[in-house]
Amino acid sequence: MTEPLFGSNLVAMVTPMEPGGALSEPGLTGLVDHLLTTGCDGIVVGGTTGESPTLTGSEAARLVRTVANLAGNSARVIAGVGTYDTTTCIRRAKEAEAAGADALLLVCPYYSKPTQAGIVAHCLAVADATELPVMLYDVPARTGTAMEAATLIELARHPRIRAVKDAKGDLFEAMSVMTRAPLAYYCGIDELNLPYLVAGATGLLSVVGNAFADRNAELIQAVRGGDLDTARAVNAALLPLADAFMRTSQGAIMAKAALTELGVIPHATVRLPLLESPPEHLLRLRDALAPVAAVA
Image (cartoon, rainbow, N blue to C red; front, side, top):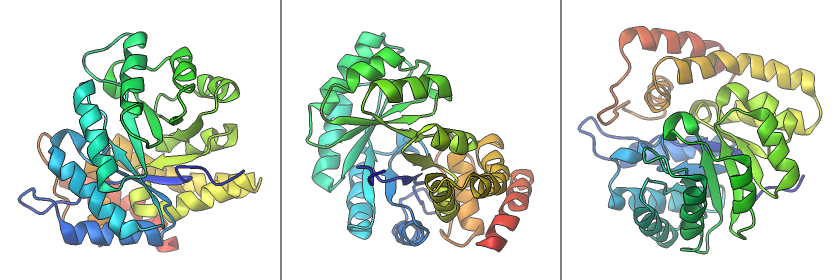
């Protein structure tokens, strides 16, 4: 396996914020350093976990510029540019390219529920707007519309549409598309990282990786090396974290809480409509963090 264009151990990075809601430069610097130190080789900036619906265009571009400068050549910087408006997506894609992004993450348009032909037209228009490679983001639980297999295969004909973040969870469809289209697949569901890797996924795009990208690196390496006993052991250790991060309340909320507990960022501030974790959620998170943090 050659090292993929987007990396293999990707993290859907949270956006550190001050208590008043402003972007936190110290938090951002500390977080990027933590991600690089723990083996992340691809950082998604301004995605859903980065609270993209609350970011202004200038904030999104500033985040890309700052992370690109901090990461240097140590990790690919993938900018989330997806909205439900094609014109806005094109503008954000161009701004991300100018700010130094290495690639784009493009979610299926949400809420408006376009047809599959509309999804194709939207994605092609954005892919045509810059010279950056594009990773599609298929997450029907959030968008209300899935990218069908035929749609993914058609979009793969575009020379810059190169990958999929799959948060659909249909492993049979994913394996089918992998055999029929030159798309790199990234598991976007932390609970399913192991089966996706075994089935042929190029890598992970993880929320849990905000805290423990090093454990995800161990999982990827074990699968690549054919050591499934080790892979299962690492996966078993990570499952309680995936449960605490993704099934307690919401990924961005819990990831920020975890990073605060670990001392990586100073504040767990989120912007409305999100709210910080209540005490009972923090207790559940701490129970999941403790054994993994002890090993790390």
